[in-house]
Amino acid sequence: MRKILYILIGPKGAGKTYIGSQVNKNTNIKFLRVEPIWLKLSPDEDGWQRVEQEINKEFQQHSKVMIESLGAGEGFNRLHSSLRNKYEVKLIKVSTDLEECLRRVRNRDNSDHIPVSDEKVEEYNKIAASINHKWDAIIDNNGFATDEEILRIIESI
Image (cartoon, rainbow, N blue to C red; front, side):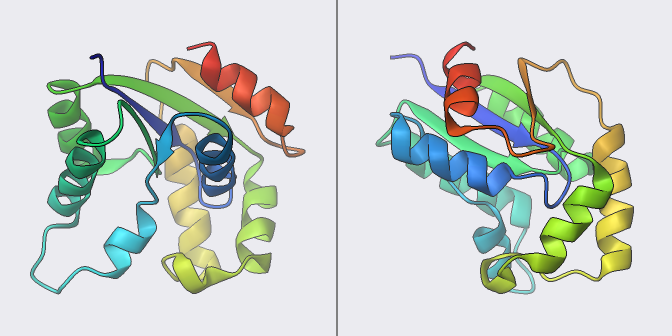
């Protein structure tokens, strides 16, 4: 059976977690939140390796898995390369205005998100917004894409 990994890539506050939650609720794609994995790491643990282990675990029970990421940096690039050797990987850009992203981060419940300052959010988001992969799909989430639009885009790839 073909195993497909969908990676939602975009700035903090772009809506990746919301989109993944809707996909998890309305399709047969299992959404694995990545930030809680990072929050539980021990100081000497490799976060990227741990994320890959959790993805592999999900694929033991599901043929389609979705994760979220900023999609930047050497760690992500190594993870992406490793995962492409095992699974069919679909990259989905979640596009949102950076000011809107910052507003969303300021107003959300951060209990299950990695805490970062406004300055760090702005820094990370500039990097995330400049990432250019070969996208399998793009979700414009500036005014919050409707659930129907999100599901239609995901199901089309």
